[in-house]
Image 1 (tube, rainbow, N blue to C red):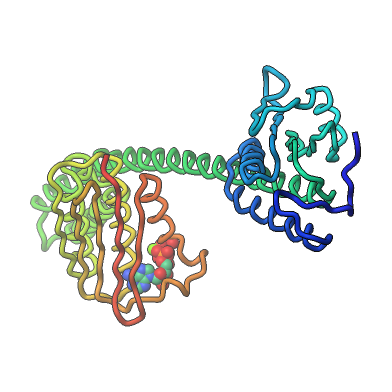
Image 2 (image 1 turned 180 degrees about the horizontal axis):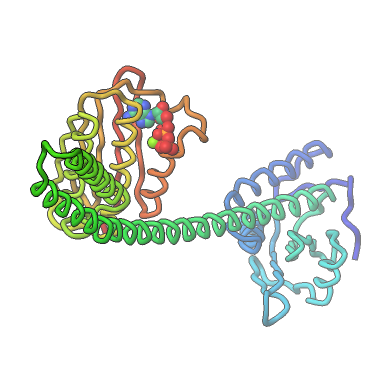
Amino acid sequence: MNDPPAGRAGPVGHVRPDGPAGHRNLELETLLELSRALEGAPTGFEAAALALRTLVAEGRFAAGEVWWRAEDGPRWRTIGAGADGDRPDAVIVDEVMASGAPRRVEGWWLIPVASEGVLGLGGGPDVSGSFLLGVAEVVTATAQGGHLRRRLEEKEAQRSRLLRALLTAQEEERGRIARDLHDQIGQSLTAMLLGLDRQLERLDPSGDGAHGELRRLRGLTAVTLADVRRIALDLRPSVLDELGLAAALRRFARELHERYGIAVTVLVEVPERLSRQVETVLYRVAQEALTNVVRHAQAAEASIVVTVSRGSVQLVVEDDGVGFDPAALAPAERIGLIGMRERLELLGGSLRLESAPGSGCSVHGRLPLP
Ligand SMILES: Nc1ncnc2c1ncn2[C@@H]1O[C@H](COP(=O)(O)OP(=O)(O)OP(=O)(O)O)[C@@H](O)[C@H]1O
Ligand SMILES: [Mg+2]
């Protein structure tokens, strides 16, 4: 067992250029090629296996083997490549792994990688110590990158699950409050209104002022009833569940026209009822987009168009208002826009925004249909 001949560089492969500079160039080329081949390897084991295949397939080494620590069961998980020679014993591989440094063993180079495995290369030329460390570095970095990527993906999946649960809970809660407001408080206020009307009929309008007071109370009750209905509608319109997206959007558009005077045309060309989830997301996106139109656009007209084509549903909300530059917004200034995108992306869809100062705004949402 020799230590790697650091500094005493030998040629790597079948070409044998003269002089140490030539050796080093070839080694560097090999390392570059290796890092290209390993790009995006998903796990440490994959990275080591790819390194093995690359180095053996390119003819740099005659044989190779990867020993990877198994999570359970047998101590090592191995794969080999190239001509079968006498491969180093698992006990020696253990030792190399523990030492953390590359070692020469009976014609084999054993290189610990990613603190989880050993890459063995046999039947090859003499190589420099820095080449061996370079191989270890490339495989380890790829393995760690893969590890980080996986953790990020897991985190992202976890975030999506939480967000979905949150939005579902929020919709249910809103639906319940909207029903309570509409059915209970709304009913009571309607009963009060009718009772006040009956009293008003009995009282003499030119009497002692009670009539005037009652009229004032009746007015207040009517306004409160309208408020309760509006709040219930904003929370979750029952038409969305009962009659579907088209009816709910038309109702919302009418409401905006009555409240703010803006003309909103609604065109929904959908062959049948969509799933509750899809309808809810489209309704919420349209609601946010139109609320933005009312709050920011100073538009006279707006439109909502929903169409289905090629297995997906498209929603476009457009206005002829002042427009804005989406790229100029800081993340903290676009929470509403981010919310629209997140709702769509949770169901595998996407959001596109087109706007520029002076030329209105259009919001394009797309959702795949099952
Ligand atoms: N239709 C529109 N016309 C003009 N400007 C718009 C329009 N929609 C959005 N904007 C601009 O984009 C910004 C971000 O919109 P976003 O909905 O994310 O936030 P917001 O409406 O200001 O607040 P909220 O978080 O309550 O929705 C707005 O503040 C506004 O400047
Ligand atoms: Mg907004």
